[in-house]
Every structure is written in structure tokens, then in C-alpha cells.
Length: 362
Image (cartoon, rainbow, N blue to C red; front, side, top):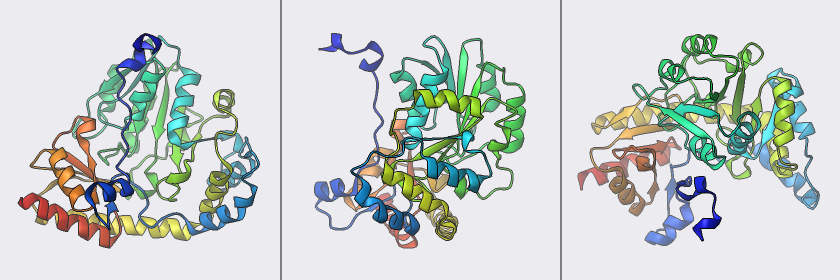
């Protein structure tokens, strides 16, 4: 059977998402489980998004608006951009795929970090593109080292900022110095899925560089807006790039409920602020609690924390599952002594700490 499969697919390791709550309940016979593994919004979806979805339910027999006309106009107005600067996708994952298909030939190369969002590597390999990974430096993207890897075959560079799974970031001064030296045949993609949780003043405003440099910025409604289940993200770049991306995008790639939900979320500033405040307060609580436990963590500007464990991460992960707390095992990322935990509600954060304390005492 293997002779029927493309060679670049045979050895490919698929993306493994965080365990679903219902699966953990079944496996361990639990009634209550909290999920802190997938960086979802602990408050649920934007209330205005829910209202918009309920109104649109009776129209789901119709194909969605393939151009995302109303959503595109609403978001362009919110961001003070032209609608020609925007393209929407079935989550950022699809946009990564569209970007790779649009801009790279099979013999060209893609650069990213060795410990970052796994889909950059997976999607590159699915498309039979060579990906060059550069080690992180103190858990941060090493832009100088990445720059040194650029050659005539380089076409794309993916930078997750803030980075998943470390929660670290590269600042605006580092990014600007980096962009100044990038050849014109290279396009840089900034994946800013967690930007609404950033609480530092030197985080770059990457959108301001789209007209000066070959830059694409990815954003999502999955995190702060709480729409992970509807899968909708968007890219911001120059109109000439958007035109070619639109040629590759599948028709009706963003479903109608996702479109109206995103429109609702755009106008729900109160909910976004509440989410941000919850995450920032929860982060400080977890920092203090982890320090009391003697645990080492990586300071974060996202809605999750990477934690160094004195025991094998898979053992910690399994023991926490038995107690009804789902975190992320970092072994898949090549980090066998780390777990990643999403910042939840105060109740969830307290339960996580209590279970972690219990597991560490075993």
C-alpha cells in the first residue's frame, strides 16, 4: 500500500491536538475535567458572536459568502485598513497552507524556529517544501541566526510572535533590524495569534511594515474572541499579495456561522477587555504559585505558560489527566521536561496548582 503514498507523506508526524475533555472523562471515569491544553478562551465565546450565530442558523442551507464581504468591510474599518489588505481562512492553519502554495516552488526553502508552532513544519512537508529550523536562544527566536540561514533558495520565513509554545516574543527593534537585511526575494510571515494578550510596550506593530517590506501578518479569532470551534483567521498584507492568495484559496473556505460570529466579536470590545484582564491577572497568580512550588517557568506574553518539570513531562501529563486536569505534554516539541498550561479562570488556575502540587509529591 505504501507505494501509493507520496514519499514526503510516509514519514510525516501529524499534529496532535490537546486531549478533548469528553475523552478524558471516559478514559478515567471522571465527572469533572478542566482543559488547559489548547490556549482556548476560558470565558467561552464572545456573547455578541453567540447572538450573531443564533440569528444566522436558519440560513445554513445556503453556501457562505465566498468573499467574506461584510466581515471584510467590518474588520477593515476596525483596523483602519483597506478591505484589499485582508484575506480570511479556515483558521491560521489554512492560511499557512495557502501562503506556502502561493509563494514557494518545490525547490525553494522555508525557515522557522526549531521549537515553535508545529504546523509551519508539517504543512511545509505536506507540500514537499524543504524547511530549515533554527534553534531558539533563551527560548526566543534567534533572528540573527535565522538571517544567516538565508540563501538564494529561501522564499518564506515564519515567525510566531508571541511564540507558541514558549510565550516569548521578539521586540520591535529586533524585528526592524531583521527586516532591513532581508533580501527582496524573501517573504516574512509574522504569526500573531496571541497578540491581544501582550502586556509589553516594545511589541512590534507588524502591520505598519506591510507596504515597506515583504511582510504578511496572521491573526485569529480563535484565542481572545473564543471562536476556536468555528475556525476563522485572517492575513494582512499588500493588495498585490492578496490577489494571488485569493487565487489559491478554496471557494467557501470560511463557513457562514464563522463569518457572522467574527463580525459580532469585532464589536465586542467589552468581552475582549474582560478576557485580557482575566489572563493578565491569572498569569500573576500562576507565577507566584509556581514560585512557591519551586517550579521554573518561562515568562510569557501570551495566554499560556511553559513550565519546566523535574520529572518526565509525559509522566506529569498522565498523572494530571487522572486528576481531571488536561495540560499539554511538550514531548511532541522535543521538550521532554516541560509542560504548557493555558491560563484559565481563577478556579481553574487554583485547581491546576493543587493538582500539580499533589502530583509533584508522589
